[in-house]
Image (cartoon, rainbow, N blue to C red; front, top):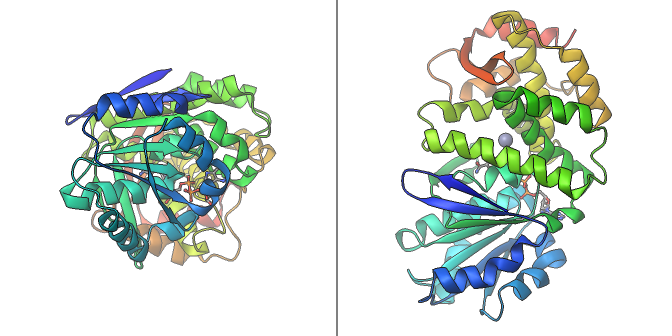
Length: 357
Ligand code: NAD
Ligand code: ZN
């Protein structure tokens, strides 16, 4: 199966399915006949479990493997610098190719290395997490600065995405939940029927059948693809992808990356955005029913108790997307119809105090 992502600069394929990786070797040989060198950027965890499958799929193409720490620790200046040094030592040039093999962290790092090495060389995303159905598509690549996440980056689209769902079999439950939150997000901002089909059919995230997984990830990628096609650089509708992220990012940052996963934080952020949407935009959404479903799937559905509301508010105000004084939330007029809405500090604090009560 393949989905085509259209951006002003480039149209590229997302090959998705069990065994999708098998087409990689011939794709590279066909697309890059003059290839000089190939560098794989992957993390310790993914390397240990899945590298042999990737190497087999390369069908004899020689690859240099640059291994970085797992998780958010990959997105630092030090690791970025090490990747550039590795590329130089192994004599990559402008006719070389980078494969970013891992979750969203490796994808963001690998994409930024590709975007900046010799002013940009091609790269292919090979996502290995559910979350990366989101991050591998759309061309946002970045590393973190100590004072903020994704503060240094670029818009740089991959040549292709090879999403082999067999890699997902080894994901720990916490990471499955993290990624599935973004699938729910895609449904809520774009497609009521998709949301209802998720809510009615998915009762547990353990042992999801591969056809079900494939269907929902395909749908999620199609929605992301449509939004990115319309607004690659986030001048407008792309901001809707931040649904649940205003509070979500604040929780993640306050808790320290890792303790709460991205998706767990976004799940609580979506609950809050839905509460605000009900009050401010007359959305009649059954937030309690949604919360029970999330609860059943193993999500945290309360604000972490140890976090001060005023600190969360401060974090939200530092958001890259905030303009001027008021925090801007993505709210829903209806499921499938997002809008950007400014919310006053007082109202945010008032609603945090009665979170889902
Ligand atoms: P991640 O890359 O940190 O992966 C999560 C953990 O799972 C890591 O420890 C990793 O080693 C492990 N892992 C990866 N694949 C595995 C597998 N198949 N089996 C077992 N373990 C595996 O995180 P993520 O959740 O995939 O992505 C989060 C990152 O993505 C964040 O840095 C976030 O900022 C970024 N992101 C980017 C975009 C974008 O548009 N660029 C969108 C959303 C999120
Ligand atoms: Zn996200």
